[in-house]
Length: 68
Image 1 (cartoon, helix red, strand yellow):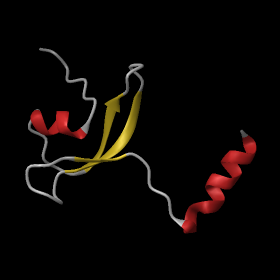
Image 2 (cartoon, helix red, strand yellow):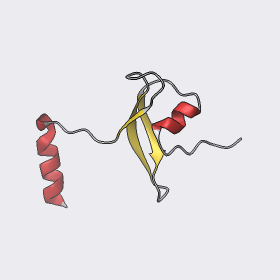
Image 3 (tube, helix red, strand yellow):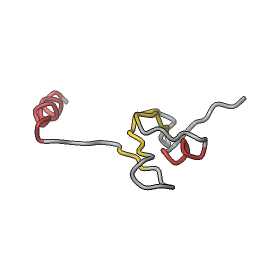
Image 4 (cartoon, one colour):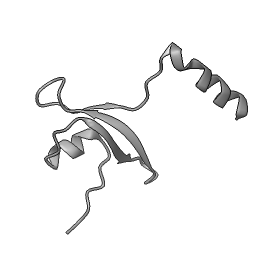
């Protein structure tokens, strides 16, 4: 039994996953990271949300950038 190594939400969809939520995907360097997979917005499509930013969270990003 092979384990799925998804590179996008579309790979999860092809494997039969249909519940929107957070999933891990693999990049070209075989590193994993989390994305939000949306399987509900448009029937037949799977959308990847990689990053979201709101002004209410801007201080988190400013502190992180300063500490780099």
